[in-house]
Amino acid sequence: MKAIDKLSGHVIICGFGRNGQQAALTLKIHNVPFVILEKNEERMGRISADHPTLIFLLGDATEDEVLKRAGIENARALITALPEDADNVFIVLSARAMNNTIQIISRASDYSSILKLKKAGANNVIMPDRIGGTHMATLVSKPDVVEFIDFLSGEEGEPIHIESVAYEHLPDEVKDKSLKDVMNWQKTGVNCIGIKNAEGKFLINPPDEIVIEKGMRVIVLGTKRQIDEMKGNLA
Amino acid sequence: MKAIDKLSGHVIICGFGRNGQQAALTLKIHNVPFVILEKNEERMGRISADHPTLIFLLGDATEDEVLKRAGIENARALITALPEDADNVFIVLSARAMNNTIQIISRASDYSSILKLKKAGANNVIMPDRIGGTHMATLVSKPDVVEFIDFLSGEEGEPIHIESVAYEHLPDEVKDKSLKDVMNWQKTGVNCIGIKNAEGKFLINPPDEIVIEKGMRVIVLGTKRQIDEMKGNLA
Image 1 (cartoon, one colour):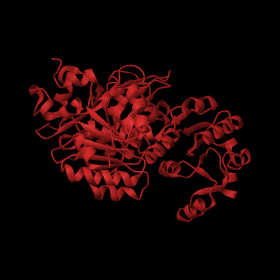
Image 2 (cartoon, one colour; image 1 turned 135 degrees about the horizontal axis):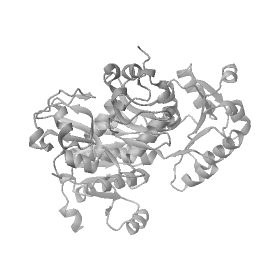
Image 3 (cartoon, chains in turn brown, red; image 1 turned 120 degrees about the vertical axis):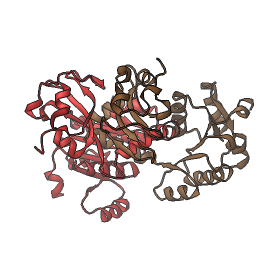
Image 4 (tube, chains in turn purple, red; image 1 turned 90 degrees about the horizontal axis):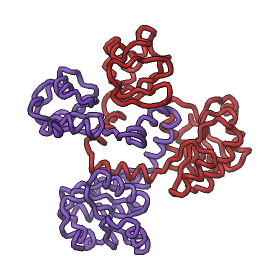
C-alpha cells in the first residue's frame, strides 16, 4: 500500500493475463513505474511470488474505488488489457471521468469495439490478433525485414533503439544548425531516419540541409550509448 | 477448385478468424497468392460473399487430405492461426511431413506451446498477446516512435517501406562499389539503415566505405518509387 501512495506519473495496468504481463515486461525494460490491478487472487498470488519487485493491487478494475487506490488521479497512463471488451469500455469510461488528461490505451478483441472504446475516451486501441496476423504474413512476404527488426530489438549484441530526440535534448553546439551538423557532431554513428516538425508532421529521410529548430524532434536509429553521445550526455 | 489446382509457390492460411483475416489482408497488399482453409461453413459463406476474389476451401486443416487439396506440396508457406494450440501443433506436424522445405508459421496462445510447435517443425511461432502487450506499453514509453512507425505504414501520404535489396537487384553500375556509391546513385532519397552480409549477420548504420559484394543485402527505408529507382528499375 505504502509503495502505491508514493506513486505519481506512473502507469496502471488493468488485468495481468498474457497481454498485461507483456506490457509490464516492456515498461520494466523502459524503466517506467507501474501498478498492476488483478482481481483473480490465485493468479496474483502466484505471479507476485515470481516477481517480488512488482507492485500489485488485488481488486476489480471496473470499480472506481480500486482505480482510486491505484492512484488514477496522479497516473500518467492506464493500460486496460482485459479479455472482455465490455469490461475495457467500462474501465475506459471510469478512468476518463476521474482523470481528464491521462493517456488511456485499451485492448480490443472485436473490430466493432474499437469505435466504442474511442468514444468512451481511449486514446489508442490495440487489437492483438490484428497485429499478430500482420506479423505472420510479413514473415512470409518480407522475411529479411522481420529478421532485421527482431535484430534491432536485440537478441544478440547491443540492442538498437529507435528514439525521438527533442530539440531541447540536443547539445547547445548543434541547436538551430543543419541536420548534417547535428548528425556529424561527435561522429556518433547514429542514423537519422526522420524528423517531426513543430506541427507534429513527420518527414522521412529528411535532406541534410534542413535546420533543426525549437519544437522539432529528430528520429534516430542507434545503440543507447550512441544516442546518449548524440545528446551530449557522455561529453 | 480449378484456381487451386493451378497454384504453386502460394501460401496456405489455416483458419479465418481475426488472426487469419489480417494475415490474408497483409498478403493481399504484398501481392502474394494464397488459399484459405476454413472448416466453419457459415463463416466461410459469409466471408467469401464479402471477398469474392479470395480463394477459399471448406475443410478441416487437421486432415491430411484437406492440406493436399490446398496444394501443400507446391506451396511456399503455411500459416496456421487456429485458436487451439493443439490443433496448430497437429497441422504443423502434418504439413512438415508432407513438405520438407515449406516455411511454416504458427500462432501460439500459450508460452508453453512455443517449444512444442518448433519441435513439430514450425519455422516461426507468433504470440499475438505478447506482441500486442509490447505495442501497448511502447505507446506509453515511446509514443513518438510508435507514431513514427504507424506513419511509415502509411495512413497518410505515400507509404514508406523497409526493404531488403539483394546485391543481384542492384544496377550493374554500383555492384561491388562502396555503400556511399550505391546510395548516391541517382540521388533517390533512400536511406540505408543496415546491411546483411553473406553469412547472414546484420550490421546497423553501416559506414559509408563498406563495399557491397555478392551475397550481401542492403536494408533501406524509402517509398516504393524511391526503392525501385535505387534498383535501377525506373532508369
